[in-house]
Image (tube, rainbow over all chains, first blue to last red; front, side):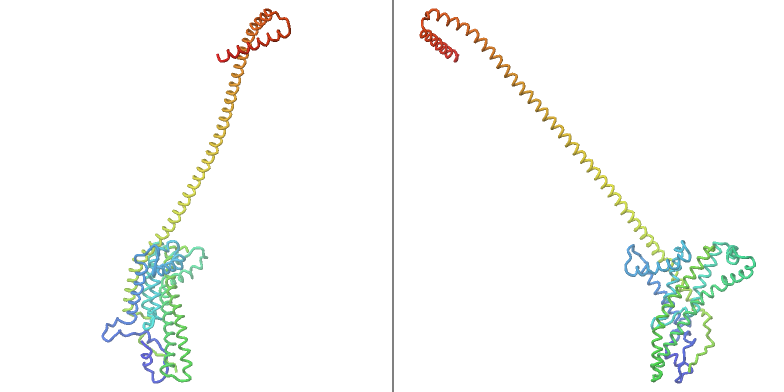
Length: 267
Length: 180
């Protein structure tokens, strides 16, 4: 959980040990706590509180002339509307704004938890969270597709798009079926998961390097490595904040594009 | 030096059931509160704001149009009033000129009339005087002739005295007659 804890793990005895998968494993928060009450669960609850509190402050009793936090909330709303909903879904994109705003900001705050001191965990690096989000989008996509195109029409539009030479369909149809129905939820969730996972590992690595060479085993030769590790931790933290926001954006953008595809298969 | 910890029991690609459940609950809460309750509110407000701005613009346009109409109306009235005033002035001037002409005409007529009356009076008086003179001259001549014959006009001096006396008498008579 914390650096000393990692360094005390087996294989210690004066040798530097890079953080591995064990940094994604958490025991219950305290001794005797229920086994489900772990740090990721706590952070997910915290995320819910932050997101809800922010939007409550921004959107509850909105004023015609916005003041304070409502301005920020409106900027967020307009960003999602103009960058995600309208380009991906089109004119009726505004109807999906409640879902898209919730999804985007839920993932954004969830990811940014990875750079908040003490917390330091983007919980999307636990695949359960991306799976839940991707599953919701997937179910919505299937439901909307069948509702708007019909069961047969949905598969026909997907596997046999018009205007291609006939033999091509032999290859195209199974590929389209595979990518749309089977792979899509996996790529959707794993993209978010893998980015957060790798980012967290990278940050943990540099932070551990800095801690080990500057505090645990301070030597003349090692100090330089420690300083590099420290500086890289700062640089990577900034980079991670960007990646975390970007991944939240991409996840929501893809969700909107799946919804848009279900509503308007001709595009 | 770098030893990667091999954790065989934990596979990061296997979701933890507890996290699946809590992830679902968390997302559901956010969807319900933010998505279902709060975002529609801001959408409504944004729509209202658009309406208000568009309505405000429309109202401003209307007011502008109204003001312009009023201005045009006012200007038309002003122009009308000016024309009316000019017309009245013109009319007054004409009337004035006419009145002056009439007055002059009347005055001239009156003057002419007075002059004519005076001339007539003078003529009448002259005629009367002439008439009177004529009769008196006859009578006086007869009387003078009688005197001249009665006195036996012998010399120039007597004759002259007779005439002088006559004239003096005449004068006296005239003087006596005048006050009457």
